[in-house]
Length: 547
Ligand code: ADP
Image 1: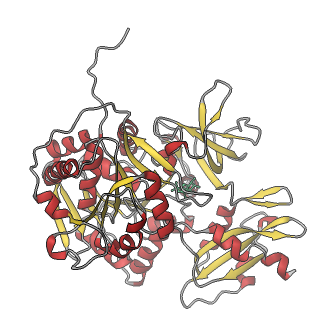
Image 2 (image 1 turned 135 degrees about the vertical axis):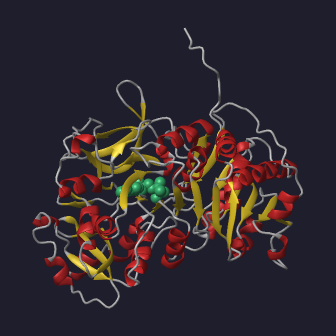
Image 3 (image 1 turned 90 degrees about the vertical axis):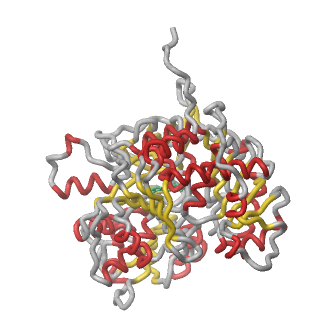
């Protein structure tokens, strides 16, 4: 017998309709590429998204067509998010930090039909435009006054002219909630980037889940500033969650330096932010150097790579900002786990609670996870044994766009498919997952595994260390041994021996790094993560060469 409830497809447009109807006056604040601060409301967002949906139809965009963006976090980007997905097209956020060759590979693979871009990226678009035969329209996200006088981009359109030319009467179409809504490519650290194609259903379910109190805990009273770019897995879902909850949203645009971010945090009363650990380093450096405090921010989401405990302590102990350590992947929309204590843990000592918080966290409802051995047997949740982390759920990919790479899932005994994350993790009896490493970064020393994240966290706790990466370096006797690559804080003195001695008592002796290389900077990838494969190419033979 079926239930007798209404059929109401979970569509992204319903988030916008809700925001307009119930939070119409709520503000959206953006630092613009044009240099000023722009203010709008959810009501205006909805009206302009409808105009843009009319414009997309006029440009010949049909249901299922890919609409690409190359843009910072801003209100126009948000309008395209809703206009494209809401009208049945597929929003494809391109990462402007990628190499032009990789960018054109992705845009061609996706067969993007329209490309919206912020003026900052005009030179990049000029460099790749001729290589994008499928793109029929290029749209500069600005007004007529700021349009480039002369440009090599063919038939360049002006965003504000498109919006102004249309009526705001547009009825969001109803269709199957399983229809594709948006497309994000993985960064392709191994092989070509592959597309994760989300659906309306997966996106709306993910939005419900991340808003929950034991996930990112979002409310209409919040003022959210996503530092994580809208081109990095849809800013972890925050542009959708803001509409669902009616929270004020503040977009930093191109201003990602500590000073610009701090001004917005304080000026707009931001309560919650989100970003990868490397961006917070810049912010904390600025706040520290100027002896500032956060007067409204109560919490920040840190994920994308492991949050060093030292950074967590600084945020919490020095600035009173609670860190929500989260883990996820492009293939998971992206949120999988968040580290929020359970009621049963409230009597733990402060230090014990901190240790739990440092883990990657518990699965949010909608994500099932397990850890398995190389032979596929499940590993116990004892907080010690580790294995490869596998996940499944309604916002985890079943396959990549265009079937790239074949079937990514691994079947269990009951025939259910699990997505192998490539992360090595343990899970404790309370269900808190802790990542020791990505399987490709694990250091295999004499047949035993050494997790690089622990070693990096120790280095990061040294007062003279600004950034640290630990890589597997070839070794004659042990196959691989840990090698630390370190950026020192400006003006600080630190020797190899001092840093190696710092590990004493903090880790099993045989885990201690064999050597330290001091560098000016560690290369970062397009989403702000340390490029360890690049470091391995450069320093991976250092121990065999020096022995
Ligand atoms: P890509 O895999 O293309 O670099 P993703 O953003 O999808 O891009 O990265 C997902 C990976 O990032 C995870 O599989 C994991 O290795 C790492 N990661 C994400 N969050 C965390 C975290 N909190 N701690 C440790 N690693 C993390």
